[in-house]
Amino acid sequence: MPAGIGLGAHQIPVSTMAATLLRIHPDNPPMNRLMQAVEVLRKGGVIIYPTDTVYGLGCDIHNAKAVEKLCRIKGLHPDKANLSFICSDLSHITDYAHGITTPVYKVLKKALPGPYTFIFEASAKAPRYGGVKRKTVGIRVPDNQICTSLVRELGNPIVSTSIHDEDTLIEYSTDPDLIYEKYRSLVDLVIDGGFGNNIASTVVDCTNEDFDIIRQGAGDIEQYL
Image 1 (cartoon, one colour):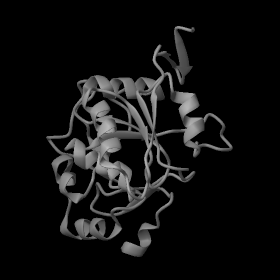
Image 2 (image 1 turned 135 degrees about the horizontal axis):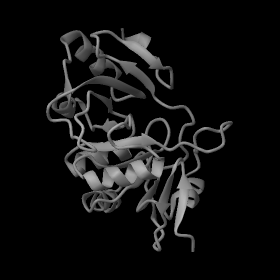
Image 3 (image 1 turned 90 degrees about the vertical axis):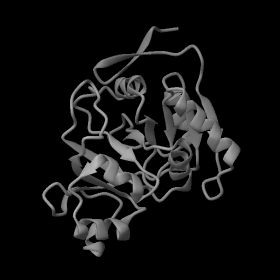
Image 4 (image 1 turned 180 degrees about the vertical axis):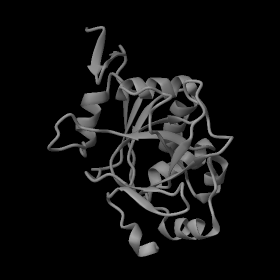
């Protein structure tokens, strides 16, 4: 067995144990299966899970070693990576984001849960990865029962980044079985919540008290402005 797999500019150690493939019904996720995934997160594991857009690669927001592993898998540096925080609802957002005005909050209430990533100035409580204070944070509240239930049961947000496909024509993998085959030796658990979307979230920069669309994705933010 090879010592590592090259993804990006990094060599990722290959695990001798294959990841667990956990099938969860997207509309009515059983609590016992959700708790299996939560336990993996609590133990510092990295998981792949469904959202309302593309499948995500995630771990516990407070586990720095897990975040480092996630970044190695994506070929990112923890102090420079544009990672999102997956929240179960709006209650977590003010813990990690600073400067949310009343007009912005009203838009969030209308748009979330939904296929959006909102960029805000990072608050003092935002975790430091790589020893560097984050200037901004990306906040997501996906319209997907599996991932929001995971966050709720875990008790805090999940750090997340999307699963990209190496095929530039496809860009995002949507088939959970194919995702599992690709990542089974790199992550601890893959949740099969059905086929994913192949369009990422719409990224909206709110750091200037305005709504600047950085990336147009699955969501149309204009309808809420």
